[in-house]
Length: 327
Picture: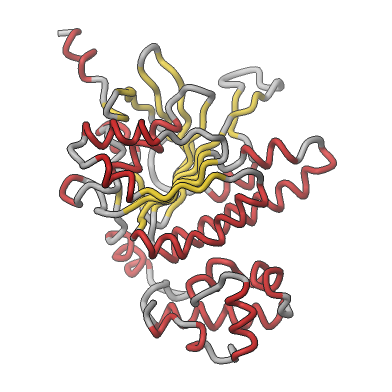
């Protein structure tokens, strides 16, 4: 870890406070910014005001080091910064086109749809695509996969890596998988992500699925407020990780039916407004025969359009065969 990112570099962190932070798994000032004042206070027992002061100083330090943007900047500076955002190809040129070139770093990209629409297949493909060199639309880096529903399949990654021309054994080594058994465990895993990002040079964090445990554990209207509060904190921490570590975050989500819908699609993403407002990009997946349809539902700047992609042995791809057979 660079000296400038060490906890001691923050004025006000003495040996006792440092020990409390270390015991809570907070190792550097990046962790401080990612956890936020409330998370720090709860994990360490520090007074909320002190935790807020420490977090603000940590943020200021990261701004000085050029690792975070200043509070007020010109639109020109933001434009220049956005030119430096990197992207990971999905394996399908059509899906990449929908996303403006691929999955963005410093953003949360959410894929939602019913079972069998390709959400997990996209995740498996991305675990391999991120490892490709930059000239092949990868980031030459590793991936972290938080599996909440037992859907991760190493043999699937093995096959995709082979098809993409990578050594499958090495490809598997560059993916760290954490199985989350409940929502509290899911949150604990996220606390450890910073350490793992550095360990394997990860540029992709996948949560498959982000909302499943919260939906299963918080049943009935009486628990809705607590569920949304916990989910809100989880999603905001994901956003801080994406921005602080400059990595791409991909979250999958389930759908729920809305019986009061008379026109259009009666399905919407689970998690309510909390997930809707935190995700940078939301993509709705549907089946269409052997192919899949992806629609950009929410984006700061992409148009709401649909594209078709397909699932193959080599992961996500374009349905080229169908096009050829029509000629």
